[in-house]
Image (cartoon, rainbow, N blue to C red; front, side, top):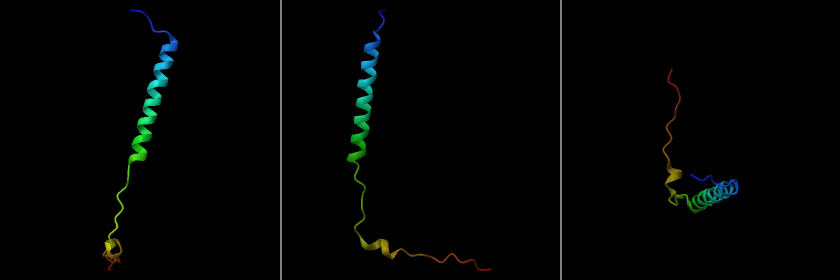
Amino acid sequence: MPQMAPISWLFLFLLFSIIFILFNMMNYFVYFPLTSKSKNLSKINTMSMNWKW
């Protein structure tokens, strides 16, 4: 089998690295966190956690 030239390995490494970085950037910037617009968050029932000795 013929060996690949080092410039070809370098080109493939750069190509796959750029594709990997672009894929991760697209996944990062496309994500939209869901914001709850309801006012139920202010009505959370908080139980007192005092110890009853």
